[in-house]
Image (tube, rainbow, N blue to C red; front, side):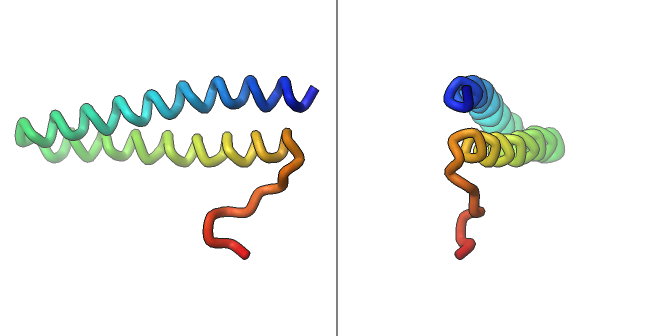
Length: 74
């Protein structure tokens, strides 16, 4: 059962990754047009998605009973 949950979480994670990439691409396009405020809004949305992606990574590790340590933790 946990493998099924992990697979479902991975599918959702990919949706979040695609959305993060889209926000970053839009931020770059907006910045190139000279609108740094709007670019920062898109970049912040991408960073919010990154936090969600990291939470999904922890959930996937939990489902796979791998445990989770943040990068750099010993």
